[in-house]
Image 1 (cartoon, rainbow, N blue to C red):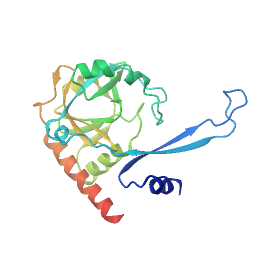
Image 2: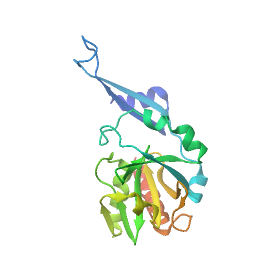
Image 3: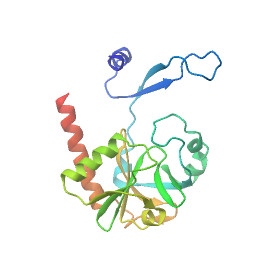
Length: 207
Protein backbone atom coordinates (compact mmCIF):
# COMPACT_ATOMS: atom_id res chain seq x y z
CA UNK A 1 0.00 0.00 0.00
CA UNK A 2 2.79 2.43 0.93
CA UNK A 3 4.75 1.62 -2.22
CA UNK A 4 1.73 2.14 -4.46
CA UNK A 5 0.97 5.44 -2.75
CA UNK A 6 4.52 6.69 -3.37
CA UNK A 7 4.34 5.63 -7.04
CA UNK A 8 1.00 7.37 -7.55
CA UNK A 9 2.09 10.52 -5.70
CA UNK A 10 5.25 10.84 -7.81
CA UNK A 11 3.36 9.87 -10.99
CA UNK A 12 6.05 7.47 -12.15
CA UNK A 13 6.02 4.01 -13.70
CA UNK A 14 9.64 2.90 -14.07
CA UNK A 15 11.40 4.00 -10.93
CA UNK A 16 13.62 2.87 -8.09
CA UNK A 17 11.94 2.46 -4.71
CA UNK A 18 14.16 2.52 -1.64
CA UNK A 19 12.87 1.50 1.77
CA UNK A 20 14.81 2.81 4.74
CA UNK A 21 14.27 1.48 8.26
CA UNK A 22 15.53 3.91 10.89
CA UNK A 23 15.88 3.62 14.63
CA UNK A 24 13.16 6.22 15.05
CA UNK A 25 12.85 8.46 18.07
CA UNK A 26 15.17 7.88 21.00
CA UNK A 27 15.38 9.39 24.45
CA UNK A 28 19.16 9.20 24.58
CA UNK A 29 19.89 9.55 20.87
CA UNK A 30 21.20 5.99 20.71
CA UNK A 31 18.67 3.45 22.00
CA UNK A 32 15.86 2.81 19.46
CA UNK A 33 12.35 3.07 20.86
CA UNK A 34 10.14 2.98 17.78
CA UNK A 35 11.21 2.49 14.18
CA UNK A 36 10.33 4.60 11.16
CA UNK A 37 10.02 3.37 7.57
CA UNK A 38 10.85 5.83 4.82
CA UNK A 39 9.92 5.07 1.21
CA UNK A 40 11.74 7.03 -1.50
CA UNK A 41 11.18 7.04 -5.26
CA UNK A 42 13.83 8.06 -7.75
CA UNK A 43 14.28 7.91 -11.50
CA UNK A 44 15.32 4.53 -12.89
CA UNK A 45 18.62 5.03 -14.68
CA UNK A 46 19.82 2.23 -16.93
CA UNK A 47 23.48 1.91 -17.94
CA UNK A 48 24.58 3.20 -21.33
CA UNK A 49 23.77 0.52 -23.96
CA UNK A 50 27.45 0.46 -24.92
CA UNK A 51 28.19 -1.08 -21.51
CA UNK A 52 26.39 -4.27 -22.50
CA UNK A 53 28.16 -4.52 -25.85
CA UNK A 54 31.68 -3.56 -24.84
CA UNK A 55 31.84 -4.62 -21.20
CA UNK A 56 33.34 -2.71 -18.29
CA UNK A 57 36.42 -2.53 -16.09
CA UNK A 58 36.46 -3.23 -12.35
CA UNK A 59 39.01 -1.75 -9.97
CA UNK A 60 39.93 -3.89 -6.98
CA UNK A 61 39.73 -2.75 -3.38
CA UNK A 62 40.67 -4.59 -0.19
CA UNK A 63 37.42 -4.31 1.76
CA UNK A 64 34.67 -6.32 3.45
CA UNK A 65 31.41 -4.49 4.00
CA UNK A 66 30.08 -4.17 7.53
CA UNK A 67 27.09 -6.54 7.89
CA UNK A 68 27.53 -7.69 4.26
CA UNK A 69 24.31 -9.73 4.20
CA UNK A 70 22.21 -6.63 4.96
CA UNK A 71 21.18 -3.93 2.50
CA UNK A 72 22.23 -0.58 3.92
CA UNK A 73 23.15 2.88 2.69
CA UNK A 74 26.69 3.07 4.02
CA UNK A 75 28.71 3.66 0.85
CA UNK A 76 31.43 5.68 2.56
CA UNK A 77 34.22 3.21 1.73
CA UNK A 78 33.26 3.06 -1.93
CA UNK A 79 32.72 6.83 -2.10
CA UNK A 80 36.24 7.43 -0.79
CA UNK A 81 37.63 5.54 -3.80
CA UNK A 82 35.44 7.09 -6.51
CA UNK A 83 38.11 9.48 -7.81
CA UNK A 84 40.71 6.71 -7.92
CA UNK A 85 38.31 4.32 -9.65
CA UNK A 86 37.24 6.92 -12.21
CA UNK A 87 40.84 7.86 -12.94
CA UNK A 88 41.50 4.20 -13.69
CA UNK A 89 38.53 4.02 -16.06
CA UNK A 90 36.61 1.77 -13.67
CA UNK A 91 32.89 1.13 -13.68
CA UNK A 92 32.70 -0.29 -10.15
CA UNK A 93 34.95 -1.43 -7.34
CA UNK A 94 35.58 -5.12 -6.79
CA UNK A 95 35.84 -5.98 -3.10
CA UNK A 96 38.22 -8.67 -1.90
CA UNK A 97 39.32 -9.71 1.59
CA UNK A 98 41.98 -12.18 2.67
CA UNK A 99 42.39 -13.41 -0.88
CA UNK A 100 38.69 -13.98 -1.56
CA UNK A 101 36.48 -11.92 -3.88
CA UNK A 102 33.11 -11.05 -2.35
CA UNK A 103 31.14 -8.60 -4.50
CA UNK A 104 31.31 -5.33 -6.38
CA UNK A 105 30.46 -2.02 -4.73
CA UNK A 106 26.85 -2.07 -6.04
CA UNK A 107 26.57 -5.54 -7.55
CA UNK A 108 27.03 -9.26 -7.14
CA UNK A 109 29.75 -10.95 -9.17
CA UNK A 110 29.85 -14.12 -11.27
CA UNK A 111 32.70 -15.77 -13.09
CA UNK A 112 32.82 -18.48 -15.75
CA UNK A 113 35.86 -20.72 -15.34
CA UNK A 114 36.34 -24.02 -17.14
CA UNK A 115 32.72 -23.93 -18.25
CA UNK A 116 31.33 -23.58 -14.71
CA UNK A 117 29.34 -20.54 -13.57
CA UNK A 118 30.51 -19.58 -10.09
CA UNK A 119 29.48 -16.95 -7.54
CA UNK A 120 30.22 -16.40 -3.82
CA UNK A 121 27.46 -17.20 -1.35
CA UNK A 122 28.88 -15.91 1.96
CA UNK A 123 29.77 -12.39 3.14
CA UNK A 124 27.62 -10.88 0.38
CA UNK A 125 24.23 -9.33 -0.16
CA UNK A 126 22.01 -11.98 -1.77
CA UNK A 127 20.68 -9.73 -4.53
CA UNK A 128 17.48 -10.31 -6.48
CA UNK A 129 19.27 -10.19 -9.85
CA UNK A 130 21.77 -12.73 -8.51
CA UNK A 131 18.93 -15.08 -7.59
CA UNK A 132 17.37 -14.62 -11.03
CA UNK A 133 20.63 -15.55 -12.76
CA UNK A 134 21.03 -18.65 -10.60
CA UNK A 135 17.47 -19.68 -11.43
CA UNK A 136 18.01 -19.09 -15.15
CA UNK A 137 21.23 -21.13 -15.07
CA UNK A 138 19.45 -23.97 -13.24
CA UNK A 139 16.56 -24.02 -15.71
CA UNK A 140 19.00 -24.27 -18.61
CA UNK A 141 21.16 -26.83 -16.82
CA UNK A 142 24.29 -24.71 -16.87
CA UNK A 143 26.99 -26.07 -14.54
CA UNK A 144 27.17 -23.74 -11.56
CA UNK A 145 28.54 -23.46 -8.03
CA UNK A 146 27.89 -21.12 -5.14
CA UNK A 147 31.37 -21.26 -3.67
CA UNK A 148 34.34 -19.05 -2.72
CA UNK A 149 36.22 -17.27 -5.49
CA UNK A 150 39.86 -16.33 -5.11
CA UNK A 151 41.32 -13.31 -6.80
CA UNK A 152 43.45 -15.62 -8.91
CA UNK A 153 40.37 -17.50 -10.12
CA UNK A 154 38.66 -14.23 -10.96
CA UNK A 155 41.59 -12.87 -12.97
CA UNK A 156 42.07 -16.14 -14.88
CA UNK A 157 38.35 -16.66 -15.59
CA UNK A 158 37.12 -16.94 -19.16
CA UNK A 159 34.18 -14.64 -18.40
CA UNK A 160 33.14 -12.29 -15.58
CA UNK A 161 29.95 -10.32 -15.11
CA UNK A 162 28.17 -8.37 -12.40
CA UNK A 163 24.46 -8.23 -11.60
CA UNK A 164 22.06 -5.74 -10.06
CA UNK A 165 18.34 -5.01 -10.17
CA UNK A 166 18.69 -1.85 -12.27
CA UNK A 167 21.67 -2.94 -14.39
CA UNK A 168 20.64 -6.63 -14.71
CA UNK A 169 23.76 -8.30 -16.20
CA UNK A 170 26.83 -6.22 -17.09
CA UNK A 171 29.83 -7.97 -18.71
CA UNK A 172 33.31 -7.38 -17.25
CA UNK A 173 36.23 -7.44 -19.69
CA UNK A 174 38.99 -6.07 -17.47
CA UNK A 175 39.95 -6.10 -13.79
CA UNK A 176 42.68 -3.62 -12.91
CA UNK A 177 45.32 -4.21 -15.61
CA UNK A 178 44.25 -7.77 -16.41
CA UNK A 179 42.15 -8.58 -19.45
CA UNK A 180 39.38 -11.09 -18.80
CA UNK A 181 39.24 -13.90 -21.32
CA UNK A 182 39.41 -12.55 -24.85
CA UNK A 183 38.58 -9.02 -23.69
CA UNK A 184 35.04 -9.11 -25.01
CA UNK A 185 31.61 -10.25 -23.88
CA UNK A 186 31.66 -14.05 -23.49
CA UNK A 187 29.20 -16.54 -24.93
CA UNK A 188 27.69 -17.68 -21.62
CA UNK A 189 27.32 -14.08 -20.49
CA UNK A 190 25.57 -13.17 -23.74
CA UNK A 191 23.19 -16.12 -23.39
CA UNK A 192 22.30 -15.22 -19.81
CA UNK A 193 21.71 -11.59 -20.83
CA UNK A 194 19.23 -12.80 -23.46
CA UNK A 195 17.52 -15.19 -21.02
CA UNK A 196 17.25 -12.37 -18.48
CA UNK A 197 15.55 -10.09 -21.01
CA UNK A 198 13.02 -12.84 -21.78
CA UNK A 199 12.35 -13.15 -18.03
CA UNK A 200 11.80 -9.39 -17.66
CA UNK A 201 9.49 -9.29 -20.70
CA UNK A 202 7.42 -12.15 -19.27
CA UNK A 203 7.11 -10.38 -15.90
CA UNK A 204 6.03 -7.13 -17.60
CA UNK A 205 3.38 -8.95 -19.64
CA UNK A 206 1.89 -10.32 -16.42
CA UNK A 207 1.62 -6.90 -14.82
